[in-house]
Length: 251
Ligand code: PEP
Image 1 (cartoon, rainbow, N blue to C red):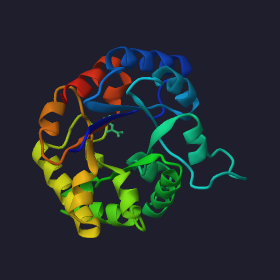
Image 2 (cartoon, helix red, strand yellow):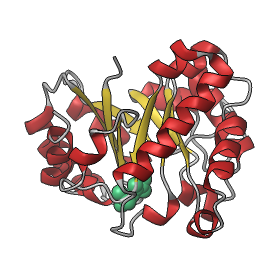
Image 3 (cartoon, rainbow, N blue to C red):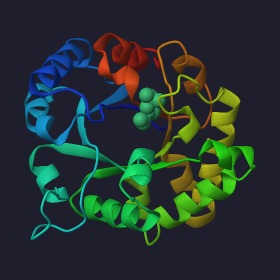
């Protein structure tokens, strides 16, 4: 049985006070939520304070990126053991915005995910095709490339501690979500790829989130799909009532 996981990716939004306010509002509604795992992913500057707010609740903390070295002369970077020290249970890697604006590749995603796993932090590995790739009917090739190369060298145990987020780039921040059929089709394909590499028991245990314009209005139909195990939520995670409604919409 895969536990549903809803993660809020706050992206580069919210200063410290705003982060504290948002986390506190979410906490008021979800502090004892057992059925759905809710994860908040604020900016680096707010991780420590948000961590303090949600400690002792069922809400988990996630970061939005990491660097793969443990420490040293890498000005501006943050490592997995530093994320661990503020209480991160999860970290997003390979988000399409990082692939698009910051030169993230499958190879760097792979290094980052392995560095996280070493510290006991669960990577949320983002994969997904762009609009022109879908129009050219290359979406399965693109996602296969992301999956195979981002997860290269993962052991079975690594795979069991990894969450996949299928995020078609054309659905991120556009208001146009993938239909439940499109999401299910790709999630089933991803599970099949994992099955081919790690076998059925691992494939059946790995959680695959959908991301791209998830809202309270569409979560129910998306989560009703057999292979959709949660959501990575951008815009709607910035308002406590919307994020809480999405989490509760999974019940
Ligand atoms: C995201 O950035 O991961 C995302 C899914 O954004 P939105 O929900 O705003 O489409």
